[in-house]
Image 1 (cartoon, rainbow, N blue to C red):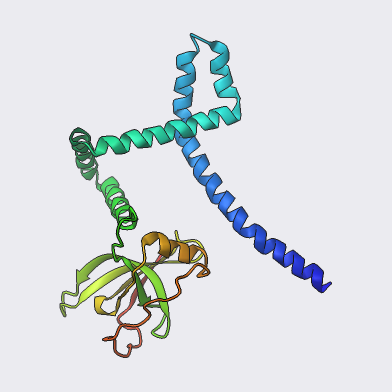
Image 2 (cartoon, rainbow, N blue to C red):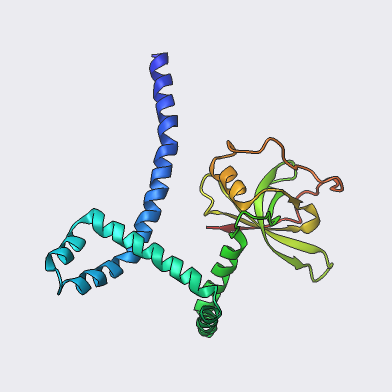
Length: 231
């Protein structure tokens, strides 16, 4: 019976990472397929006068339709990325952004989303020093977070840092902490390394970590830490 339980547990532990990987991969493939699906319909309608059978095949064969949808979506993203790096494309994008800024509710969503994406964007060529440790949920513990913004306390002039602390293993939920910047411990991690650490529940971790600051004195009772749950 002991061997049975052990083998069952080993099987579960082996399968879970594979299932999670397949789930995430499938989610993104379905997302790309959904974006490209209307373009596949346009393509099928375009070839229908020349070859009705091919048009019907494009729409009725699931794997072909999905493959074309994903391919067209990736091509669209590539062309869009190429376009916005050029002067003309950048001007068009600026015009679109100017139009969005005139719509009260839309500009809030677009602006916040753009800043969040830019915060986590990393090409791997440098370490932007945005991965940090902060005292959370109390002074004896540290949490991995991402420094997203800095500000100043209008009463004391103390520099503050806004830090997003993702939850494990799902980093889309987490907490937004406002802490004194001098209590933030910068880490020499890339964003990818930090996200892997969080998603893996700490199993994928570096051999060493900067856990304390030499000039960091004893912590307070946490009254300087303001928390806002992010869902």
